[in-house]
Image (cartoon, rainbow, N blue to C red):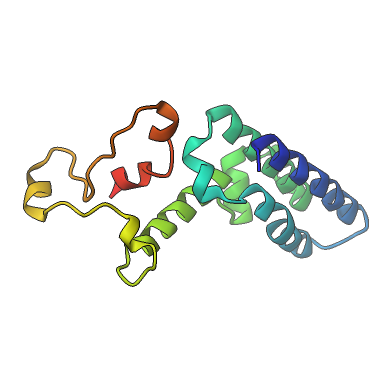
Length: 158
């Protein structure tokens, strides 16, 4: 799903969140509805496209969560964005996408995973201990910047 389609779909669902608020639903129910109905749309296939997002695209996705927080928790309207997340005990969507990518990579790293064979072979620990930027996996060769920003960036973090 393209970023604009994802945002548009989440915006239509945000409208129903506003209507539910006007109908008198309590904040805990509204938060549950946001987490179960709107946020999955914003995180659809996030492990695939997260590293390829531009800053503007990431901010447009984050811009959906801000009004949702204001609807569910009206006291967060005067708070800075980061304080509202702390108040609502939610992570920003970019932090959640990072966590989802790390979790997927950890699952792939497990030898019992059926996709473990897709990872390149790990470097020798004697070699990585002598490197300035010690990575467990060799850096993939990239011809384009788009490929460089893809899921293969996860290899550079481990």
